[in-house]
Length: 110
Ligand code: FES
Image 1: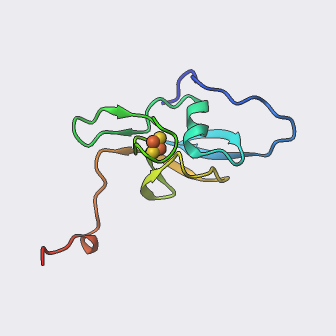
Image 2: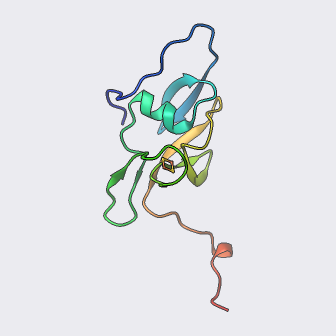
């Protein structure tokens, strides 16, 4: 759900924009900014839910340290949205709790 944005980016005439899809809603953003910045400007208030307690989480550091901004981008889970630049047509989804690993990624303990 998108709400009233807490952030804004000054309008710049002639600046290229891209459109991404966030949980089935179109979000237009200036080219070159991060996915996290684009979603914050669009009013996204939660990007994922915590593994324990399923509490809503949102970006905190905006520089790749806290991992609070994890989302699924183009089908790839656990992407740090503050480090990924927006690209036109990108599909972004909130990440719900823990990511399941495919069986091939789970060792047998040896
Ligand atoms: S906001 Fe902290 S890692 Fe992305």
